[in-house]
Amino acid sequence: MAGIRGLFKRFSSECETSDQHREEELQTHYFKASFDKAFGMVEKFYSSPGYSITSESKEHGEMMIQKSSNPKMFIIATIVSTRPLHTAVDIKVSAESTIIGGAYPKLKQEILKCYAYLGKELRKDQR
Image (cartoon, rainbow, N blue to C red; front, side, top):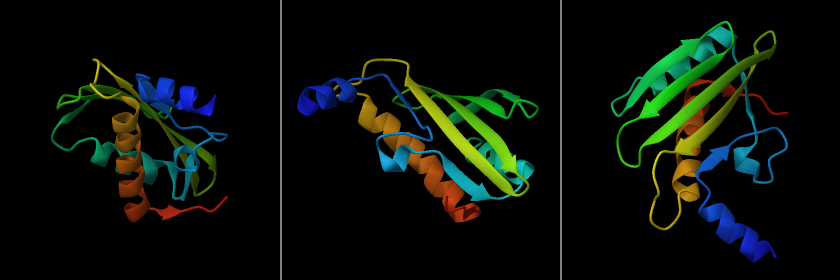
């Protein structure tokens, strides 16, 4: 049964992080940083070539990003201050087209790239 679930997951066109995610690397990442600093770092990461920030709302802690290089993706980053100098970052990525061999691994890789960048720039909060 797990093999069938893994096969279906591989061809899923969405990948997102959450507090209770089955895959440890896709669990919400918490950082010892202010909301403004974390929001700025996410904004800086997605200001690089190949990405365009289509909408952002600091009041709601959300940023919508379009990835124009192949594979094309739509990304939603949610930044939430859980308490002073403790901020959570969640990311949801959707593929805009079918990817041969399955989209899920590429979507997961996209999330992990952002988390790796944030991990270098911000101190990770061990929960």
